[in-house]
Amino acid sequence: MKIVVAGLTAGVALLASAPNAVAQPSMRYDLVIANGRVMDPESRTDRIAHVGIRDGRIAGISDGPLEGAKVIDAKGLVVAPGFIDLHSHAQYAFGYDQQAQDGVTTALELEEGVYPIAPFYAVRVGHARINYGASVGLQSIRVKIKTGIDEEGSLDAPFNSWGKILPRKAQWAEQTLSSAERAQEQQMVAKGIADGGLGIGVLSEYLPGAGRDELYLLMKEAARLHAPVFVHPRASERADTNNLLTPIQELVADAAATGAPVHICHIGSKALGAVSMVLDMLDGAQKHGVDITTEVYPYDASSTAIGSALFNDGWQERLGAKYSDIEWPPTGERLNAQSFAKYRKEKPGMAIINHRIPESTVVTAVAHPGVMVASDAIVYIDGKGHPRATGTFARVLGVYVRQKKALPLMDALAKMTLLPARRLEQLAPAMRRKGRVKVGADADLTLFDPATVIDRATYQQPTLTSAGIPYVIVGGVPVVERGQIVKTVFPGKGVKSGS
Figure (cartoon, rainbow, N blue to C red):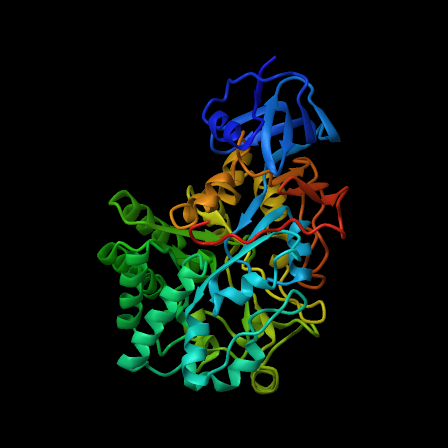
């Protein structure tokens, strides 16, 4: 019998680097996952084994049976690292539960970010089902500098209030900062990182007043702080290959010149028909030492607030879209010039669905080596919104792995677990314990049936939870059992810089 096991904390650290260590067969675990197909993207392990969990960590992996206070029979199920979502705006109780049932054990708000950072973490301690974290949000900092408004939010409501801040967009989104305001901005960024922020979130397309010089100076500060920058790239002038390359080239150049780690958000909606050339550019940059990565969500439609700067004049050319591509979630109607103007004025904070991403773009990005999977999960309003907040990870596994065979299962799991963990490890060393199934790793695990896992959420019914994911475990505590949320447990912990 091959046993990998550890007892005390010191033993966990030691045996994490000694995979063939043998322990006492009589050791008892808090939880045992028996008979599962253990898949670890780091070691490329893929075998039937038993996993023993103690004190929130994986303490043993064995070919033979293990004894536990509680045992989950995982026969027929894959035992994978819990999915890590680098791009989730659904930072509230309902959003966490939707994502948990999609296999997510860590959901991070890194593209938009928040400010101030400390309250975001404080309000969630002891009240979150899954792990959470956020970057320092440039948008929130600009709102604070220009309007004095602090972000508000709790586990019962979204942390970011688009409806509240959009009417003042000219003050924080459209205007250039003075030299004094830029100095204040950099001080606030540094304070946010010191308070636990996981990098800097930059919504360039939503902040037309943030010039290339402002972004370049922020990149220099990020490099000094060893903080990754998560960027929603600028708008292109037109949605053709020539113009779609330009916003990406800015980020490659800034990353190369400053040494800042840069992560480009939702490459599918930003690259569109130019995705192959954009990915080739990023591959080339990486080969020449530039620290730049990207992600994709597996849907052919995007979503954003109708009142945002993304829909300023000229949006049809920039986005390669027309009015009829836009769906209004409360009614399901496709918009025209009149209804678009009406809703943009009356309900600027409502998120629309924009059906404009070629399916070929999605397949290319999902299958491309190194491209991570991230949901861009949005907040549902009266149960309406984009299904990516509910079904992203199961959709990759069910549609793109099993049905379309666009990529192997192990590669898909790496895109959901190991690669996101590695993106954050320098600033947040605690991520070295996530995204793996090995002794010493955090017991954040997702158990799914590879033959049946599938997303059920649709544009018409976006909150239908995923199928084929019967168990999700956070810190050794099941938060999903037999496909249902365990409502009495809140094992989620904050992931912070320096932790």
